[in-house]
Length: 253
Image 1 (cartoon, rainbow, N blue to C red):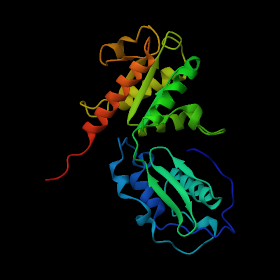
Image 2: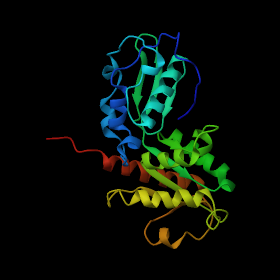
Image 3: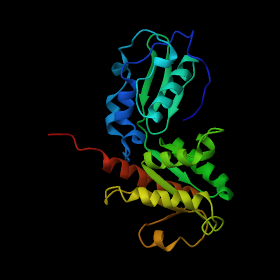
Image 4: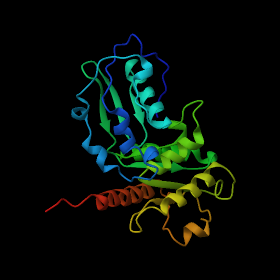
């Protein structure tokens, strides 16, 4: 999520949505316990589906019984919009305050791209983040998304699970170094086992002339962002756009 708020709901007069947790439970990868690429069903949900609201109640009865994750997310969303803030949930969408209806929800429609990198390569990873953002993708980078005090290992795993693409940035500084980059790469390889064989999920990038691990090199084609950064970015964006277009469901005849 983008932000966390501690505002108390009492006295804000915020209307509550009906069936929030049932809806979240149905379309949340965390509750479903499985990876959902693209989340096409969420595109069916918008402001119209949130039109029915019950009267205000005390905070303790806002969220029906559900899993702990649903209850926690629901309360954070309600507190955020009550305080007039925008709440973004990775892989789900964005909740905006709405004076008439309580909140307005916009489902995630942009393909999410997880950026894995070594800390030494953060400036280059940040440049990649900006390139993807300008190109109309929804990049995910830990320093841009994680909150102070958040359970970052689980947040990172959740972001990897919910992303449409996992971009691994290899360099001579990170390829043999122990740490978070290696952990994220192994988790993504495990997630890739559940992806259809004809889908591109893991996209290796080389930031310099480093040796890509054999497991990656033997199975996946990588893209070089050196010595021509712009040319490498263009090849990456072309590949991502083609894959997004290829994944689009064929309209029924």
